Length: 167
Image (cartoon, rainbow, N blue to C red; front, side):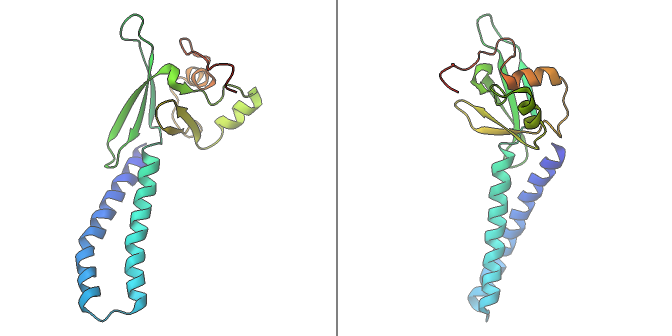
């Protein structure tokens, strides 16, 4: 997660550099004699930086850095799941969702299919009423692998399985 945070912050510095160069580039393009190739290169620089920034921002808001089970606060209140991702600036952004909102990605898979999915670099995890997240089980540090496997399989205590109509 720290490497990803550094990458996101470098993206911010890249955008600041492009913004700092925007006025000199614009002045040069407006007053100097500029060939078509130089104009295309300047435009490609700005568009490329914007595309890279947008792509990195998209994935930083979906890459799960930490997944935690929170205890139920009061009696009758459902157990919650905290999903931690990075925002645009590289700061931690926590989202607390009810445990039942998680759509277990391994729920209807046979054991061989579960093992194969857990070996993928990024496991897509859908949350009802929220966005799709990406979890790195293969490369992440697991504190309680059994609890994570139960959560992703829909077998965690207090986690209601989805309706049988939805398969």
